[in-house]
Amino acid sequence: MDTEATSDLHLLYAPIEAELERLSGFLKREFSAPEPFLFQILQHIAKFRGKQIRPALLFLSSKLGEKPSTDDHVKIGAVIELIHTATLVHDDVLDDARLRRNVETVHRRWGERAAILMGDYIYSRAFHLSTQVPGMAGVLSETTHTICEGELLQISNRFQPELDEATYFEIIRKKTAILYAVACELGGVLGGLDVERCRRLHAFGLELGMAFQIADDCLDYFGKEAVVGKSLGTDLHQGKVTLPLIYLLESVGEGEASWLRDVLSRPMEPEEEARVGALVSQHGVVVDAFSTAEGFVQSGKAILAEILSCDSVDRAVGESLELIADYMIRRQR
Image 1: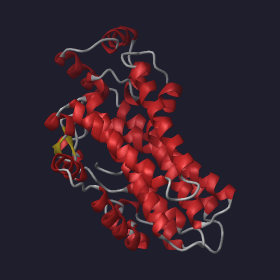
Image 2 (image 1 turned 45 degrees about the vertical axis):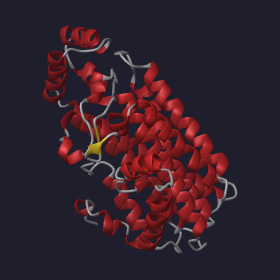
Image 3 (image 1 turned 120 degrees about the horizontal axis):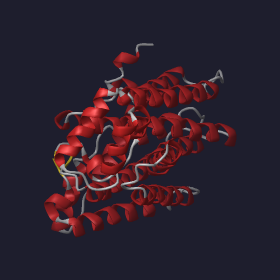
Image 4 (image 1 turned 180 degrees about the vertical axis):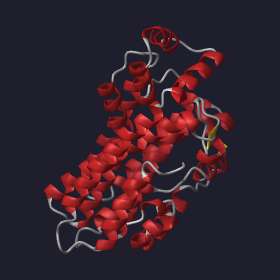
């Protein structure tokens, strides 16, 4: 299987082309409103929609079961995407980011009040939609609760150079990976899979989400904004200690470690940020962090192999899920 070709998600999404087309139409209606100011901002936010990996995982996971795709699949796929979009709007405020998908962020154009309210507006719409599909509202509201916990845990650990790997993993599990996990799990539920296989799908999605966030944190150090499509370099500025920095503190000598602990415990000057970036590059800790992300991908693929062991599984669907797992750390944005 040629994993180097995973950049073309259209090929990976071939088994769910119809579902994604229906999702696109559904979301187009969701990002509309009769009130002109609201419509203007919603149309702007609609430009944030990217590769829609999370609803794609839901659609693919549902095809591992025997139940055919229905409007409920599309509706819950939209809920997953709306929750993700709301988190982006709020995250951009927290990080004071300038760009999202190469367009100006909401708070930079309309102010923080409008951005916060728009994020809340999208969340509330997602919750309303989730109540229209039996058994979904509780899981999805709990998921959003967990995402908020993760963001608050990250805020509480800003400018904390002693942050350890276990705490970092807990943060990214809650703020990012959980939505991947629930997308896969609910896909299995909608597809009619048994409880055990849905549990394994949850575990599979969790591993993918962990890999995704680690790779995203690495992009903050070496990515290019024009390619990644969002503001970079915000983690250091916001006092976020991510995996490359955790590994850096383990790699440098005591003198540099003492200096790092000092600058990581407070807002940095630009020249200090530049020096930290140079140390990250010099010690190769981004490569180490990517290796950790690769470990999560391989763990996820092992779980997936167990799920796919059933003879009745559509092999094209299984192959797409495996390629998406690889894509988590090979993506450019």
